[in-house]
Structure formats: structure tokens, C-alpha cells
Image 1 (cartoon, rainbow, N blue to C red):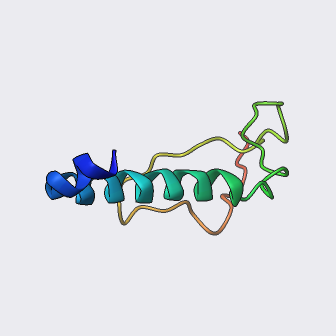
Image 2: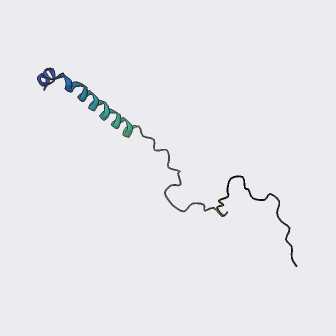
Image 3: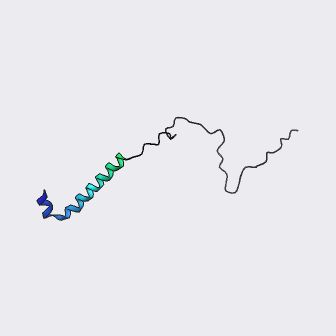
Amino acid sequence: MWTFLLENPFYIPFIALNIWVIYKVIKIFVYRNDDNTDDDDDNDDGILPDDPELDLPPGVSLPTEPKELVTY
């Protein structure tokens, strides 16, 4: 194998690139962070919002003062 690499040196950068990629993949899997155990992304029906979801256009907001209840 060494004689082949010495006779064909254009394979050496390709082998070096493969070794570097394998190193990076192993490093990602060994040092990955598993501290996100308290995320609520597992659809376990956490706290559901009670308020309606409003889709107001820009510049429009809800009134700040409540209207008086008028009864006839």
C-alpha cells in the first residue's frame, strides 16, 4: 500500500480528507450535548394556552379599556 501511495501521490490528500471527516463525525457523536431533557417537544400535552390566538393586521391592537356593558 505504501508503494502505491508513493507512486500515486495524488491519493494522499483524498485519504487525509477522509480521515479528517471521520474524525469530525466521531467528535460530534462523542461530544454531543444531551442537556435538553426538559424540552416540551415530545408532545406530552403540557400546559395548553387558554387565550384565543389572534391574527391581527399590523398596527391594529386590542382595546385597552373594557367597554361598558349596556343593557336595555
